[in-house]
Image 1 (cartoon, rainbow, N blue to C red):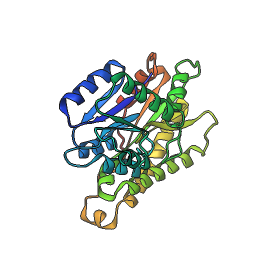
Image 2 (image 1 turned 180 degrees about the horizontal axis):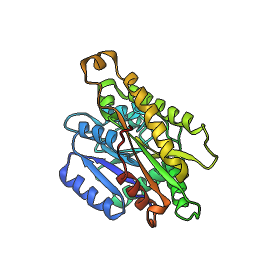
Image 3 (image 1 turned 90 degrees about the vertical axis):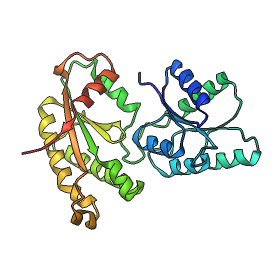
Image 4 (image 1 turned 135 degrees about the horizontal axis):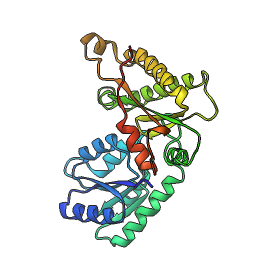
Length: 286
């Protein structure tokens, strides 16, 4: 089963180190940040099940970080727990208004914090089944679907479709523009799937910017080529005219990889995901 990944944003080095070690022992995948800007960068680059956020940081306060996270569709529903020395009721209300799910004051009981983290992640997991940007199945639905393939006697193929350069486009144009590009690409893929597809085909998110398509070995390569060709023809339109004219419109592309049931014995979802991502390369069509 996939580990839940949590981000701990805390500038007290000793406390951050202790929390990192403790939650790793509790079988979480843990990342840490001591600066608010690093936390925002990590939240764009990785998917987190929960963010533990100190209010007082050297560069940006926790309230402003929370606002930024809630503006981004990728992180708008990630549960956030404030870690703080502030005990005033008005501070707690401020956090709750921003969508913080819990508020833990220092010093805290580590066992109580563990339970609060577990409960917050479990509550969020009950609703986090559809990607808010593309309306495609997200984990755990994708994990459930791919795990089921491992026990199937019917041959299958997985096509991974990775939109490379979306982070740079997000930095240049903003979150909304990047979301629109991802949504447009997803719509193209969906439209192509309708052409000769079957009810057994499945499309979802392996990662926030990686789509996975379940299809048949007979259809996989041709379908992949159609998708790559269609997306590559559309990519120039995602750039602003001035960027195209300057010659800097060259960082967006779609890479792909194919994994077949006949490629080898795979025992679990994580191994399947690792093998599929390893198969992804830059795809250049003749």
